[in-house]
Every structure is written in structure tokens, then in C-alpha cells.
Image (tube, rainbow, N blue to C red):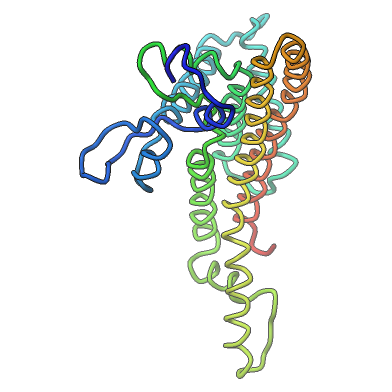
Length: 288
């Protein structure tokens, strides 16, 4: 959006909710969409460059600081970074011990990564909505969404990663036969030969829906809450252009919502981590 350009409220909102999209145009050439209509024309296989950039950058930041803390860890008086990392590790360990009954060395590191990564992506929601988009616009970048967790592509990718682990450990722990039996043998059971095929289909449908609901609920819960929070920040930002009085009122609202939103972004990261642990615990259990 060009500097100084007059836009309506709906155009302002649409601009801030549009990703920097790279894909194939209907005429066959590849490029970056300049508006929401062009992004829509690119279809399913388009890439959201801003979501990819910010999610990757935040993962690198997380990895760097935790690697630095691990490399410089000391048995003596810990520094601030080591203290923080140890607190995070203990917090995640307690969560895993309380929700995971099996034995798997992957679960705690996975839970730590999920919590910290999702939290950092959510934390970008506290950056004023116009700051980074304006900086991006100054160098010719049309759109720049900085909160990866407001992009369903990112939240579904995270959820599908967890879902792949659920399937993997379900088969590894129970075997293919045990996994299939789990999907088809419950909740309805019978020794009647004639009813078994009927219950097989019913159980498969019910358990299949239950299984598929896990990644969907994981992704949509995170996306919905963060998207709503971002929308509120955008609506508050509109008040700054409605006069001094509304601007002051908007500033107060923005502060109050930002303080409350700190709880939201932390809670959503915690819920995503906890459900990941619980779902993997169910995958490790013989009966659930």
C-alpha cells in the first residue's frame, strides 16, 4: 500500500489480512500477487512468503538461543539465559510427566519446541499492526503479515506434523493389525458374525472421525483465536484515523487488549503443546 494513499476501512482491513503470495497466475507466468484477488487466482499451491519467512526466522531465533544456553551451560551460578531456558525445560518436563504415561525421549523435546515456536509466532501479534507492513511497503513489498499463526497454512502444517507422529507411533506401538483393530473394534463390540461387518463400518466411521478431528481441532483452534486477536488490533488501529478523541480511546483499548492478549498467546501455545502430548500419549496406549 503506497505511502500517503487514501484507503477505506475495508481496504485497510483487507490489506492487513492479505499474505505476500507467490504463485502461478492464470496466464501461466509466476510472480507475486499485488492484491487479494490475484492471490486467490493462484489457487492452492501458492506460497505465503511472509508466513514462511517469519515462521522460519522465529524457529532460527528459538534454536539459536536455546543452543547458546546449552553450549554455555555451567554447574555454577547460571546466567539469565541459562536460568530462563532451565525454567522452560522444567515447565515442559512437568507437563510431559503429567500428561504422558509412556516412555519416549522424543516427547519432551517436541513439546518444548512446539510450545516455544508457537508462542513466538503468537507473540508477533503484539507488534503494532502498521509498523512492519509500512517498512515493507517502503521497499516495494505490497503485503506483509507478521503473525504466522494467523495463517491456516501454518497452523495446519504444525497439526499435520503432529498427526503424522500420531499415526507413526500408533502403528509402531500397536502394529498395523492393532491399529486397524483399534479403529474398527471400538466402541461397539459383538460376537455375532452377522453384526460384525456392520459394527466394523460403524466403528471405522466413528473412530476415523475422531482421528481426523485431532489435526483439525489443533489447527483451527490456534488459527481462530489468533486471527480474531489480530482482527481486533486492526479494528483498534482504524480508530487512530477518526480524530484525536477516538485516537486516545483507541490507544487505551490497544493497551488493555495487548495486556489481555499476552494471556491469550501464552494459553494458545500451552494448549497446542498439551494436546500434542495427550494425543501422542493416546497413540502409545494399547487401549484408550
